[in-house]
Image 1 (tube, rainbow, N blue to C red):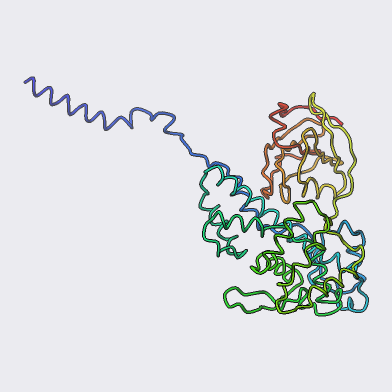
Image 2 (image 1 turned 90 degrees about the horizontal axis):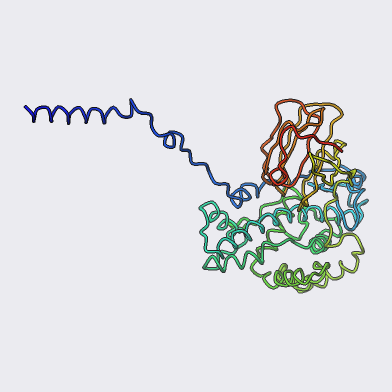
Length: 410
């Protein structure tokens, strides 16, 4: 009889174990455990690396129209304007100084992408130096650069990295200008071959594919001077000149360009003659024209005071903090509307992380977006119309304990 009751008790116990999930809630940790993805800055930059740079692509019909686009430029600054095709009458009416600025803008366009690639490479190199493994996406991106820059002949990643760090480097604008000047007589002939090429190099068939635009031709030219195996000496000369702080790199490295035109023994002499014709059209220090200087002032958020730029016009609001290499601590930018309206923000062409505050007509903070990632094109917008917003370096909200409801004054 006793054994019977023991058997009944065991069966009951087993039944209860089976019922535990139904009659007892699972531990809270097990119910709500969610693994959040870790933000990887290198992979984020890889995702953004091929986003085209901001700018206006034009195909002017007349030289007069082209001149208007470049009217605000000089030997140090060119507009963010990219010429797709030169106007037909440039042969008769074109000027060398305008030609040099057209080419400079196109090379700067490529150089901005190269700078992104170089930043990613530097981060990958630092990671490897600290004994950390690359993720599959990082390794795939590195391998893609190895193929694009013809570094595949190097057998180990460390040698490939050293080769890429020499190749993934901005092209001196003056050098490209002089080569294009020689090929086209300062833009007056042979625009189908602006750098004395005959088209894209198809790496599968090694045939040339005709260019469809001047932008394509410049892209191809930059890829070739940075990737052609015979130009190793030229690239070393460029690197050495840049590391020594010279501002006339394009002139200094011309003599090493002989292999660009293999079999053409007079090529360097002709480039030197173009350099003598050149004048002060554009220097290697040329950069894109920055937005005009905004109104300066102070803003106060709670007890904290910041130096600020005031973006009031449509142009100022559109440019914001785009293309800036840094935003110093203690500074910011304020965007002010005449009346409350729907307003949002994104990080297109913005290279530094930001904290963004939105405020209402009582000048009280209504919404805060912290640590917005560089180049992220995700739009963010408050639910209600606002009078304006303030952009600050990322981390400012945490450091200064800024919160919703704080008052802004300026």
